[in-house]
Length: 247
Image 1 (tube, rainbow, N blue to C red):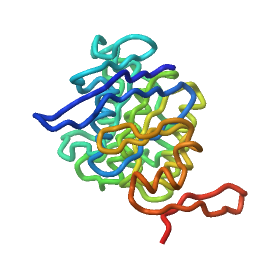
Image 2: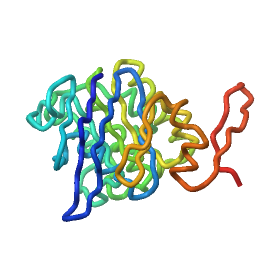
Image 3: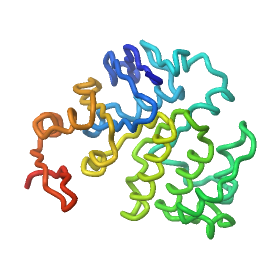
């Protein structure tokens, strides 16, 4: 496995947030992290990205400890998108996206910018954009930074996006995985998450309650236990099913 989390535990002050997390994410697959609010998802993703040191355990990327990487090495193999980007960055959209290659050298981004509908926004100030536009810029920065076969970690990337751009974002993440990336992404929309995921981690109160293929984890009985609401699978015209809360 490309990404390994071995016994990850973490606390803020004296408040435990994560408890002995063991998990793996594989190349060529999208792993979706789900769980209720305050389950510890953002903390776990920050630790997996090397942005936060855990109190216990270690994170390995291709067998090497992430904690021992230099900034340049980490930038070349791990791309990170936070749930809430800073709103006051005094840069143009083009400059924010270029930050993704700051330590890595130039790379062509025209196709990416076109697919995310950003070409007309490149010379606009980043703080003047809507939250959804800023999120698309952040996604462009992350994918522009990404080197084929690397790790992409995203915290709630589709939350502020309209349906069209959420669909575009999901397609780009799937394509990155198809090209060998290891993609780990947290999501609250379980219907979208179920459509995107190859594998899933279910985190509840800092404990990894389930992990495995999406089919194994996105079981209505498992989700009902975690979220306290019933779920059902609804048929779709293509023969697949759509996971939805039961009214």
